[in-house]
Length: 198
Length: 198
Image (cartoon, rainbow over all chains, first blue to last red; front, side):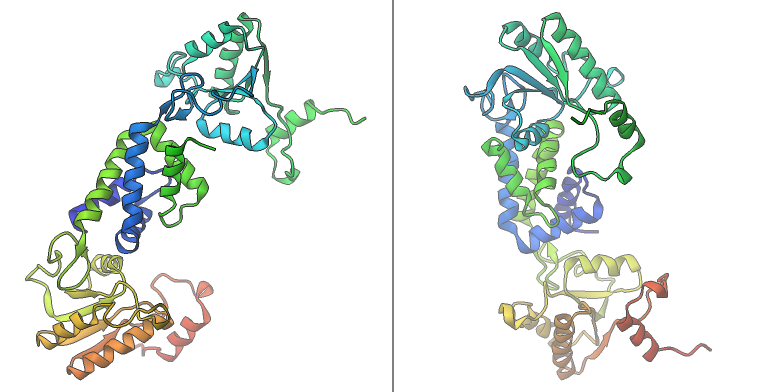
């Protein structure tokens, strides 16, 4: 329908999450009609990031240095490590301001059916950090899914074998949440784990 | 919060229409974690399109050739030209299958307050096509907005001065549309322009 270069650009936009044919068309025409400079900058930023960004040697998060900013910060609490599935999870923790320790990013979860085993998640690297002796506690913050829970269980076994305290995030009613919109599973958990009001 | 290259990539995604900070973060992490190849392809497609795509010499639509596919097609009806605001409008016409003439793309509408006058829309080029003598009818298909209607009126005056028939798209109830969801203005127009049932 369009000329080949425009068709290719629309196809290329489809790699982005949540972008269908209509959005891809809108993006392509928007850039070509109104923001060629922005398009050039985006192309450059993509190339730079693809070439420059790798994984932190210590926590596996995405960074262009060998150590990410958090792992390179000597004022963080080196006795705690929090295990998360995705680099973006770190942001939520940092925004909360309630955590001062280090992180470890799995980039997914154990999934035998997809051929994703412990070494694909870098669990050998995590275990070598456990062996280092600095870490006293590991906070498991994988997603609340079957695969996330299974991965957390697997890591807790490794941690226990190194005599490291294992904890996980509290589950229950979210702050500001209305009970009306809560699912039954969460409510059941919040009831059975109810805390005493002094 | 992130490393500089990732920050820059997120900022760069913000040039896309409808992409806010959260979507930009999701896009950046998706590509860096799961589809570096797609990111490279997108960067290449952007560069190619920015460099290669220009405007058709005849109708001003976006194309990398000097004449777009439609203008270069000798089997189209050269006696009719349809004036639209955006290149994407052409697609809707072509999909309808009900139009065989040529197009002219304004890339916007007259807007004195933004300093957009007739020459910015290429109306001198359109007038030179009117002078050519081939065109017998111009179909005005600018958007149904105040600026779109004003632009259509301006073009109709030029066309009339060249003794060219001027028409515009019929307005009324959309096919398959439910009256319940129709705005009052459209319904008022549909009533006053009601057609006789034979």
